Image (cartoon, rainbow, N blue to C red; front, side):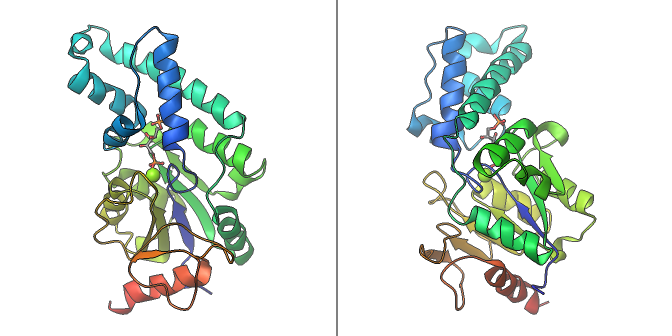
Length: 259
Ligand code: XBP
Ligand code: MG
């Protein structure tokens, strides 16, 4: 019907704006819990987001800003413990329903389910975070709408490496050209393109809006809704003012028409 069989979605920044008021706050709560005076401001966190993966982000921060911790014999254990604490705080934050899904996400997911378009997630975040976000911000049944949830440490290399999108494609049993991917960041774009996912929509947010999305088929400021038209930042959105399966199908056709 729409020319593609599955929608592969990123999570953080794409399904919900989770970084500034979610993950960042959970990191800071974990630091305070163990008596560290580390505080990741909104601006500093925007810089640290260049590193995907919470544990990797903490390691990077120590290397660049906390050299006294860098030579601990138990550094990996120390970071893993901090990250476990952070994840607990993040899950509690999600449980308070403080991080709504972005405009248009539930509309698109419901439309995909109704049209038989298969759903998958490809994310760097911790797997438990995905199910909890979908449940708390979408509904108890929403995690079950996804055939594949490829998340976190299940792959050797995180975004921008293509591994997590490769895993999602493998578990779907689909070639890249039969799928559409949705991302929010330059790291995500490089990961998706690296996996051959050329029918790629980017829905930017405050942290990513000035990044380089070369190679993405379409870049907008979100999915929008009938009463909330999107702004197109790169590419074309023919005949529609928001992103639905028809708009994604038209994008997919444009990408592969030249083949
Ligand atoms: C975003 C990330 C994650 C989150 C933090 O993932 O890079 O690391 O920032 O989550 P994506 P964790 O955009 O691929 O969804 O602390 O669980 O890693
Ligand atoms: Mg993201």
